[in-house]
Length: 243
Length: 258
Image (tube, rainbow over the protein chains, first blue to last red):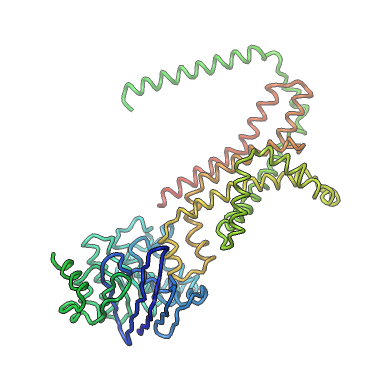
């Protein structure tokens, strides 16, 4: 995928979430956003995913120029998958229905085809035996895996993951990260934010360090983790890697 | 329950039954030889017609209040401030004034001068139509508030997820927000519907010959007491209990689900 973000600013009331942030990547498969909480990772991800629009600046993802046009943004969102920290699934629908409903209503597949795609997605991640369960009957890790199954059931152009394991215990975190790695290895374009540095290093081909609404540096993981260029990134890494 | 609580429970039950029996004996002792059910039977047709009209008015105002309730919900979420403010002002007015005032004011001041003649021209009873309309507006105002509360109670991630899977705004409401919001507000809606059925009796003040109006007529003409009031209470219970039972059943079903 190709990203061109040029001097983007996003404010929520008096808070400036993104402050003239720029990012240029000619090609990347897996982009991982790291950085302190409140630094702008989620906002950048939501912007790239077409869930928010910038107050100033321009965003281009592959051939899509993201502008504040609700219909165009909706069409853009249809092509991508998005997963949040938690509560992604619709709690009144079974795991299977959570996947088939968007396939039918958004992507226009007939029910039989939607069911087939849902079976494939659930089967791929070993979730078939949970197909009829409601989200409340699934563990947090299973819920996130069903969420990912829903997001990739229609082969999205890019998969956006916003701290997908922050609300999980270590065991569930591992099962979700494994699944994401599997997707990355299968060639899925992914942009994700995370606090799991080991995972970021293993899965990313580009890591962007986001703090105070700016990208301090964006480089391949080996370089960034070995020799962070900016002082703020050094401090952050030495803090989070200490334990 | 502990053994002591069981004994206390039985003792209280006996005491309450005794109290109730004493009340019944005293009351029936005073009026016993003066009740005359034959009189009620004479007026059966008027009472039956009144009950049927109450049923029709209740159903119509339930439907009408759903329509107005949805309009008020959408109005309150409108992007145009003038629509939002007007809706809020109207709902505030309706909630802070008595229904009796709406009915009298709405009928005699607003709608009768406007609609009575054309409605009569089409062979329709203006009081029934306008009464049903006013009741629907009243119910709709409350329903709009209930629905707004339900919609506002759905967490932000659900809106985000619904948009993220690519639903358009109508689909977001239809497939994600409403099914969850309705479950949460169902008890409140059932309570409102029960109130609406009971409040239809107030239409008697503008002369709609529904169940309460006809019963009052019967009582004042025949000097009846118990023979009028007892069927009146039972008649309304027949209408309200099914709604209450239905809501308890649905509530239980949805609770088991999530």
